[in-house]
Image (cartoon, rainbow, N blue to C red; front, side, top):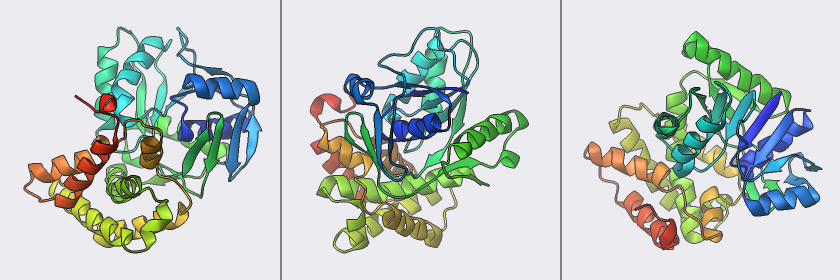
Length: 314
């Protein structure tokens, strides 16, 4: 199968390597430094499933782009512009996997596609990804623990969408990526957002690995953020179970104990973070329903203060 990974950072490169190892025809579209390193020395995966793969790369989407499937692994705040570029490049309607952290990703994708001057419309397939991936340096990505890709159960969506969900399930599963179906993807997305809202800002603000959140003082901070996020989600009509979310938080911290969260990686590299699509959406939901979220607001401000000013949204 011809697969394009658009926005090949840590997660995109990891999934791309697994697909290449399974014999699929891959194109990785990423940053100039990452692309140059892969062209020179191959894409190196450390940790789980270590190896090096020679994979075709590019810094821009080819026009036209011929692909059977696309993994769009750009950051959440870049989804709209990336969707516009992708829709303009694709030669026909193609399923696009959206594994971003945070909420409101489908709306951003739809706005980008609507802005594109193109006759075809890509098909968005949302996913929850818990694979812990860290960019060590250009061309080198480490899988620091275990995780999976979660997709909506085909029986929970219209028949036409089920077709594309099954395609991505089989594509990734055949490449050895753990994939599961969940009966309520919306609940899974909100659960991950709440868990991320209790992990990423704390690790990024304090410069610690995920495993540090299993111990005080960071555990107590994360538990308070978790409680605020659950309250906001419930107020917004998303019936999260407190014990289930707490258990997911604990599992994630254990499974990714040696991982540097994506937000910490962004802070380390002087880049814009996804605080807006994670904690920002949780806070906005809480505010809309009269839920006080003082600690969430504090950590949003702390992360914003550490982002480069030029990278912050206007």
